[in-house]
Image 1: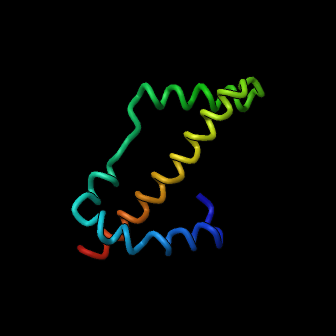
Image 2: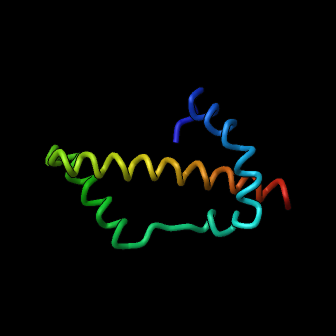
Image 3: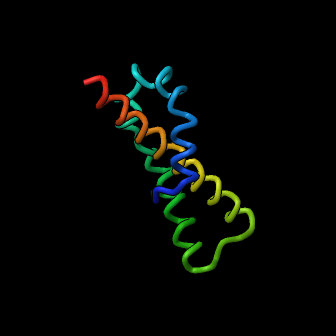
Length: 87
């Protein structure tokens, strides 16, 4: 994920909450993987998007997965920072 002013601000804004939530769960968050069925669906939508074949409903579904993926990436990054600072 590219570092932008927006992502840096978001990271800074959620860091205090993550310091409360993540210390006990950092390893679980760092190791989190999407279940294979969901991953296959995301890959199917990504392929259809690349080929310009998404329906409106699929486009909305895919956008939701993209947003969720960005959020999970942010959680993982914060969990790694917290884990490294507590080691």
